[in-house]
Image (cartoon, rainbow, N blue to C red; front, side, top):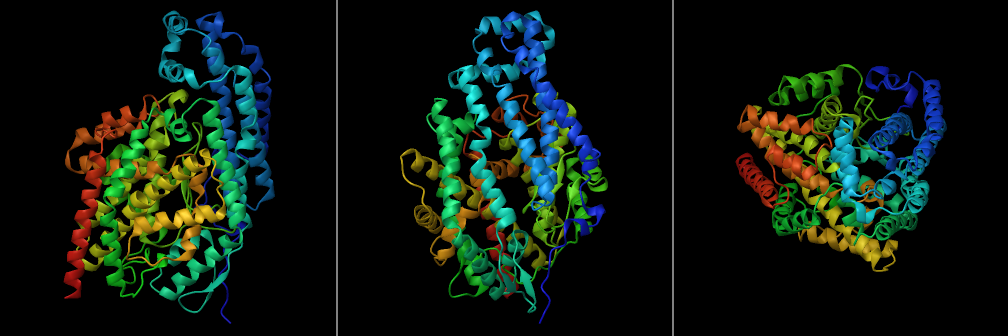
Length: 605
């Protein structure tokens, strides 16, 4: 009998490949001290209530109190969620995270009076305060955003009730996270060499890239056999979460949950609709790619477990983590020394939690607060895809670093709409670097294949998710019960539209909706698609238009939330209210699809 591969326990992971959270709090006791400090501060919140009418100085004092409490709370929350994510089965940090989440809800409730009270003042009074107290000037854009939102802010008592229900509104998402990351037990399958492999979220993606079709099929069917068992539970959590989105939008007098989600960043709904329309128009390109995949894999039927494996067999290139670090630094050289200095700091000073361990949150992300480092979570495997993930998350972290170094706390963050542009610009630059430096036709074909798969996953697939997410919200608003049967049937139909006739109709993929965390994030996923497309344009400018383009890009990274996202991007050189950037991205996809087809023809001859 071969031995089953087991994930290491958290305490068995080498310190050098873990993130250093002592830079946030030296230990849990320091966290507790800071926690009590915020609790004490919160008791003062009511003393500021009713003071906004007392002049510019009182207005400034109340505003800065709220921002100061929020700033301290964010640090607490980030520490607790990072600790929890490194081992979601650790009950100590489950508790820490739950308490921080509770304090977050309490804080939201305690300061929820601010916006409604601000909006009892007329514009003349508000802007008169700014003339009266010069120190307020830095907050002008922040206050303008609230003033612009007058029609959707409730009376103070109702805002307090809504804020107090924050934990209730997030309970479905939290339940999904615990079930998906800690409680699900996936089966053991037979690996490529006959060994027993314990399926996990992290390994699933790697196994779908296996060149052994038997392994891919076993991983695919094994994973979905578990989701099939819990399909009704997942339908319940997802439906509850969507109902919460629709409910909050309704009571805030928005026409839809989508309008509510996009309005905070002044993103027109037409940006969403244009994305779906352009992608749908270009689905024949994805269908053509699926036909190529079916032909090259030499299969009678192309299944969903066949759409991630490399087209040309075993990868001709792979990277250990250390090799990936060096390759990332090399590829990102066009970003300039100012950018590279931050990248090297991240690699050298334990900003990154590298390897997968038992109970660790799946996937990868960049996270942090204004007063912490922009940490990166990875679940490393030696693949080209992981190199791309590394430079992707590094894009987020450098964006965070530059924003926090160049903006005050009030603008020290940025919308997800902007975030995905920074990360995928790095991916595009890595692709260009690999295509410029690799001359072996097999390696070039593999990189092109990887790019096309990345585009498929980031633009086509995420738009598919976005289309389904909006569909679910619309159906719920109409009163349609979001049962597992309804969701599965609807998702299966959408999947067939996206992938075309080359793909067999696997019943398992109908359940994909049940395992997508981003469906709980409230109109989040479309920004992957818009971001990747905008990044394509920006990478081209950085690589081919000289220092001014790089300066504009770095200024975008340093802008934070000091202006609306659409305006920030216009200054960077991309107008995302138009379809042009999307069509240009599709043109690059087609160009690289053409090149891959030509290279494959050469290799076959």
